[in-house]
Length: 75
Image (cartoon, rainbow, N blue to C red; front, side, top):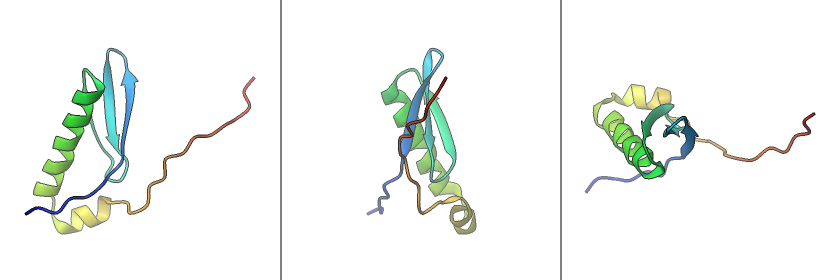
């Protein structure tokens, strides 16, 4: 049985599609819907873990990632 890991996916609209980014690994993918972008990102991350060396994983994997909102004054 494979181990599982929780990672962060940040998905934003870009033009006619969506871009998904895994902040912990700096891996991105895209899709024509939020669901497709998320699924494509999951596939890219899984492929990374299957093919990358342990040293590459250690080098790229950020253990602490924080997603928060900022409120700033504009204008």
